[in-house]
Length: 146
Image 1 (cartoon, rainbow, N blue to C red):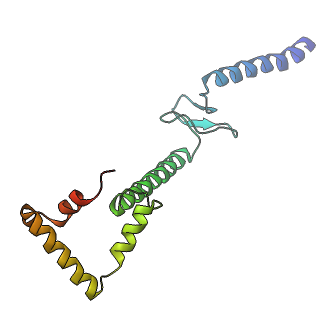
Image 2: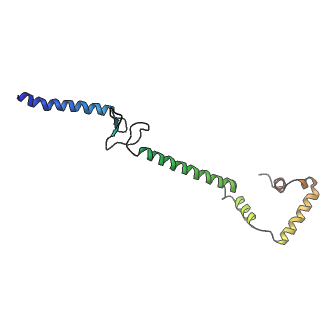
């Protein structure tokens, strides 16, 4: 009878160790496993990283939140790029850009307007084909080559 008393706890320990090894072998890299019914069980130290497999609760929500955050960041970058593109070449530090922005915001005095009209008349008199062209094309022809 004493042999049975010693063997019974030893046998129980061996069975329990075998079951624990079987469960440990079935765990995925996240630290979770599924039972025979397909129910997911995770260790306390289980981590996310097994999409589509058995994971701790909240991993899907955390993944979606991260994706939304990345989408918002990319949308913000695209909007900033659009604003830079719309305002010019995006190089507001250059002297030409600052000159052009000052020129665009300044209005001409009546004397400057009169002078501009005289200069345009002189240019058109010397270049009759310029009458049918817009101001941007004439400006490109007059600006020095870079």
